[in-house]
Image 1 (tube, rainbow, N blue to C red):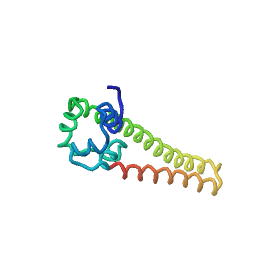
Image 2 (image 1 turned 90 degrees about the horizontal axis):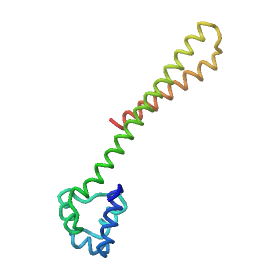
Image 3 (image 1 turned 90 degrees about the vertical axis):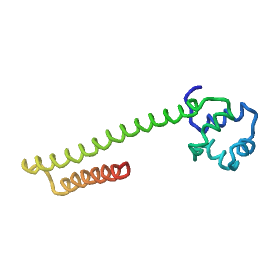
Image 4 (image 1 turned 180 degrees about the vertical axis):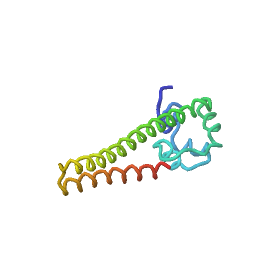
Length: 136
């Protein structure tokens, strides 16, 4: 099977079996709304029910779980990008601070420009801190 979300895989397997969401729900002991949420990737079945789901669709548990592995890899990529953005924001903040200090010593900086530069640096630091708090 090609890479797809868990929900699209469940929907495809269900349709291959000629089954409705209600029929799958009855076999799994859940509501058709639960199946609908699975297929739209809004929720996932209980871990204990994965073997039963694999049995219903005549696939291995590994085939169903493989989707989760790909999703984890994407999550790791997102974390890497997030880390790079965080470092870039902190770098901008540092550069603004250094520029203000250097330009001040050279008497080449007006107060309003210094305040703007320091404000930009503080905003970058705040964004980096907030994103770090959300991840951690």
